[in-house]
Length: 218
Image 1 (cartoon, rainbow, N blue to C red):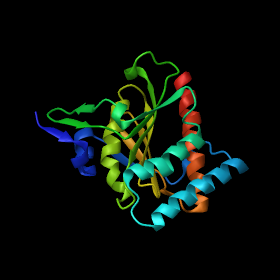
Image 2 (image 1 turned 90 degrees about the vertical axis):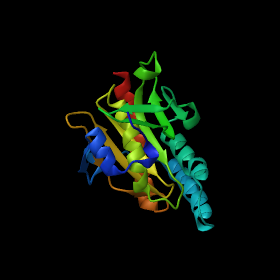
Image 3 (image 1 turned 120 degrees about the horizontal axis):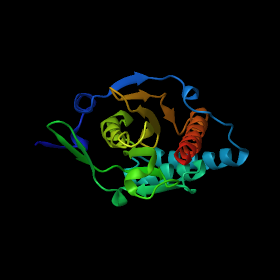
């Protein structure tokens, strides 16, 4: 049986091997309830935006810096660090194995947010958000094949999951649903250094955290 690494997959490969069908969605509000952010959150978001922009202005922002400067503070501000949600990083995540009829796909995701509300074992935990990070010079769309493959695994245990591919500057959210065939919806791309788009970015992250965490408890 041939083995493929997620890093070497194209979107065409993912569609063919996993049976995904792509859909477009021009509005987050069709899936999420976006709440107005507070003055404190706006101030914190502004600091995250300024910090990242300073590094970006100096040149390439590495994948590690993207995680440290943008992703980590955004997830903290959005509520992902609070119980029952737990953040797992790449070194603590078991390798994902997706087996097609005649192909084995392997890989390891960057960041996984899960809810432990009902979970007794890792396999039963509700996946809230799957995140794939790249450095600032990589087009965010290049992270989609890896992201979709990782998120596909969760559809064995739940009906839907959110994914996010980012290079720190641009943020591509994806909403995946199980079914025959499984589908994924590409949401409008958001941008950290744009004031208006960064506010929506925080609103979306907060809504995913709140909505999916609640569903996991039902």
